[in-house]
Length: 253
Image (cartoon, rainbow, N blue to C red; front, side, top):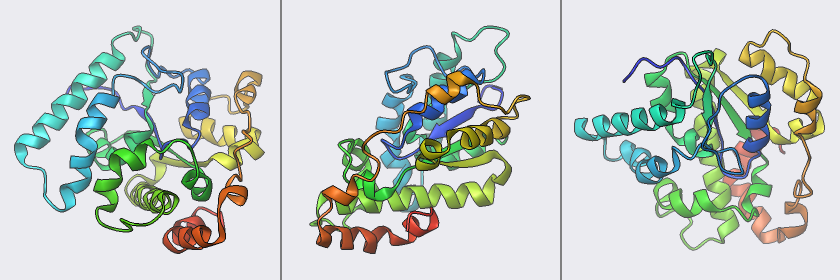
């Protein structure tokens, strides 16, 4: 792989609030791309992620062969080169936001030992009832395989949320403790000043006092706590059954 300086990567299960974090990071002086969608995702990565995530997930069952490893590395390198191409010579701090980067955390850490990762987490009960079910739809078959095949969609979504966030948290905490930051979206909305200060400290910024522009990026949505109105008791019991450990781990119950 080409000798890129270590990036900052923002990842999460879809709909967790990564857009706000990306905008804060950009205001802190990071280049996060020129080819972005309205959610601040770098559009250099989705095609690669569509092509490789499910295969990467299933490597625990069928390991990647040397040829596949080489192809994945080549594809990532090409995406990063395209992503970085608009950077100016003065740009030294860079990264990208595509929520599904969370699936590739071990791969990314392997190839950029100094990489920093911001893991955004939102209440899995709200996520279960989100209109954004792209990740469960695209990657649920690989993550869950035959588990809960006949369960309601919110239950399967909650299990995927628990599994992907739990694996990323365990990996980040054990393999890259000083380069891994977990941000609870609800904490960012409830106490933006101290949460943004924590992000700026993690980035190594000289000034850790959030700017007014950063604070204005945080607009708590009305969808926080939607599970209280949308979740039928039987479905909520099932969600707590499959995702209760992760909900406790991340401080939601």
